[in-house]
Image 1 (cartoon, rainbow, N blue to C red):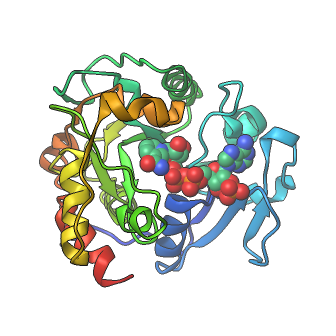
Image 2 (cartoon, rainbow, N blue to C red):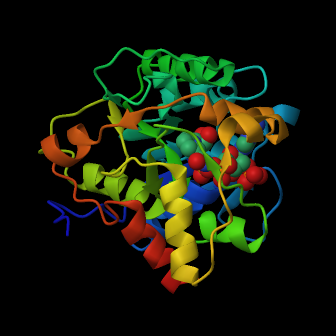
Length: 292
Ligand SMILES: NC(=O)c1ccc[n+]([C@@H]2O[C@H](COP(=O)([O-])OP(=O)(O)OC[C@H]3O[C@@H](n4cnc5c(N)ncnc54)[C@H](OP(=O)(O)O)[C@@H]3O)[C@@H](O)[C@H]2O)c1
């Protein structure tokens, strides 16, 4: 297990923008450290620590949410115009708060297609999709803001309630094969734990502004699906060749298959010493299977 050098103090106040799948996992975990945590969503919630924020219709919270805030985590993707919702609405407030740390969840889509080669943080981003160009622009805006920001580039996120098991159960599974195609992935618990590890050891670790959080074993989608069917004791349907399935896929689904890369986690796991909880899809999915 990762040993904390110092615990995250209970005087810290976190604002989590975009409390969706990853944001709520992070919020739930950080609360256990005794921190104050306020979270945003686009609709009203019964949770007293939740506030409404929707950049699309300019619904913004009262400025008092920023009182004594020490840490921000943004999990909101670029809006339909490619702008960062948090920076568009709150840049000046963020800059006038005395923030210790800002985290931004980005995607490894900014690396583009490397035809299966490994990519690391020192590689020049080469986005291929429009949404990845927008993402890279948002990353740049965060960096240029001068805030103490750390950017986490994430591959496909999975975990409890969001995995191949749900796709099988909801009959949304598409068993597609494409030669030499691999995907990288990360379990939601490792996103949270890696970020907390970096925060806990902030004073002793060298600060890196951009960090990939990915597991150790990029692999084909087919291997993952086969593994889930095996755990369920079911027979996997016969795979369809990508070329034959392509027409039926949504444009967003097609776009994922147009990029092929292996995301390196060496900076996080070797240089910075983070130990993954789920170092590959088998361990992560087994846990989803046992706990669903
Ligand atoms: N899912 C993946 O496999 C994956 C892979 C790599 C990177 N990422 C990126 O990592 C981040 C976290 O991913 P996730 O899957 O955990 O996200 P998620 O569950 O889709 O949550 C996104 C959050 O952003 C909020 N949001 C979206 N548009 C907004 C807007 N215009 N104004 C205000 N709030 C807005 C949503 O509000 P509501 O709660 O009201 O819906 C939600 O809380 C995202 O930036 C995502 O693009 C995701």
